[in-house]
Image (cartoon, rainbow, N blue to C red; front, side):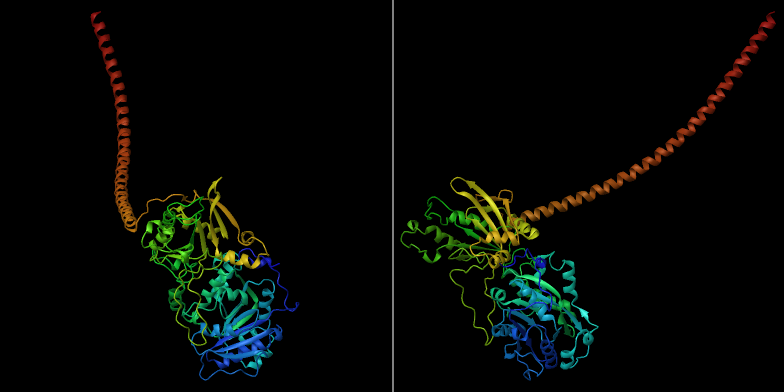
Amino acid sequence: MTARITGNDYRSLTPPELGAWTPSLRVSVVVPAYGGQDKLDLTLAGLAGQTYPAGLTEVIVVDNGSEPPLRLPALRPEGTRLVVCPTPGRAHARNAGLRAATGDVIHWLDSDVVLDRRSVEAHMRWHHAAPYLVVTGYLRFTPAELPTPEAVAAAGDLAELFEPAEPHAWLVDLIERTDGLTGNPHRAFSLHVGGATSVNAALLAQAGPMDTELILGQDTEMGYRLAQAGAVFVPEPLARAFHLGPTMRMRGKAPIDRVSHAFVADRIPAYRWLRSHPARQWKVPYLEVVVEPAARPGGENGESAGGHGYDEVRATVDAVLAGTLPDVVVTVPGHWDRVRTEGRAPLTNPDLDLVLIRGHYAHEPRVRFTLGSPHAARAAVPYPPREESRPEAENAAPSPAPAEAAPYRLRLPAGWVPEQDTLARLLDLARDEGYGLISVLLAETPAQGIVAARLERTAAFARAAIVAEEGEDLDDAVEDTFGVLWVDGETYGFLPEARPLDGRRSAYRARAEAEAEVARLMKEAERLRGQVTRWRDEASRWRRSAVELRREVGGLRKELGAVRKNLAAAEKVVQYGLLASVRRAIVRRR
């Protein structure tokens, strides 16, 4: 039984201890090289002393047009071959080596990297545990003077020759930040670096060869395709190696990113920050929507039972294309090779609805037609077939097929219409929670039973195809490896009817009106803030006046108290004077 790994959590595997197991898989070490004979000699010397059995190892050195031509030194592994690829470019050279390889595992190795003697064994112990792994060793970058090949072959520890050295900083940081790539599986494919990475050969065959159209970023792009093929990415600290000198990226990260991002944005939908344009299309879309035929008890308006109806298909396709997710393509499967047009009586054509669908979207590049519903983990084959690309240069491997599978595929019955933000919300749920399948309950009736849409993660179904036992439903394998979820369609905005679409101009006007309203409200808020400030100043003045008034009232109270005292004293004086006068009057009368 094939081991089942959840997400990218390879910790469920138990690889054997180094030196305590018996390997059986063959490994092909592919070394592309352009010049640098002195460094290549050291690389081969390091390979000659590996602990992995020589009988299970082959080394393929690819001379990518060196002048003078490269040669194989005397100190090299027994199974070493030299092939020539005159077409310039590392991707062409690696593809040439890949075609010559016969191993169960392909080990990429740069011609200026020297492996620790246990490095290949450290890689291969993982590949014996599961057949869908990508293993990367830990590189250190050394400025040391080049030793002799004999010194490399005799060294018990390469650190004695090459330390002090710098670590592969960004890779180490990524591994540490993601708990060994188990905490953020969305970026795990970045681990695929060609300097010292090994890949299961069958997995590599599913992903395809190196993309020869790329100038830079080939390793990352291949890592992305390996992830879509179901790969699990494993960092192996015991697979140590030394890079002779700094890398191109270490010498200038900004110009490297500038070049690579211009190309990988078209091919890696996972790099959402590189796809900020609100409308443009990309070579590999983020989502493919497959408009499935809606089951009907009988045909209407000319469509056959269980076939496509023009009105239903148009409602679904138009709503998908008008949503907030522009990074989408639509696939409409059907018997398009059997559709015929009727010149004399078109309204009686039994294929009328199919003719209308094909005619309506014939020149819409985001809509393509296929003869059958695409496989869960493979790209749809368009009908009619696309024109063949021009022949590749001699000895050059072909570039990947132009219809790489999108990372997500939504199977949606014709006639069901998503709201503008429905697809984006559904994708956010799948990505944030890591689900391999989200089933959307659209309806449940006695006549039709359960009607559902399915959002499938390509990587999940590719891995399910690898680990599933004979006869096992892929959905069950997906549940074990990525997880499955059911959601309510109405909650996410799926309705069984067409709705008016907001055109781009109306959307622009609505946005402009909203921005104008926001600007007006900001001005009003600024005015109110100014008024509040004035009110606060006025209130402060009122408080100061109140304090002064309280002081004045206090003074007046004191004055009034003094007056009252004076009046009381005066009253006493007056009363005494009156009494004295009365007394004097009485005395006179006597």
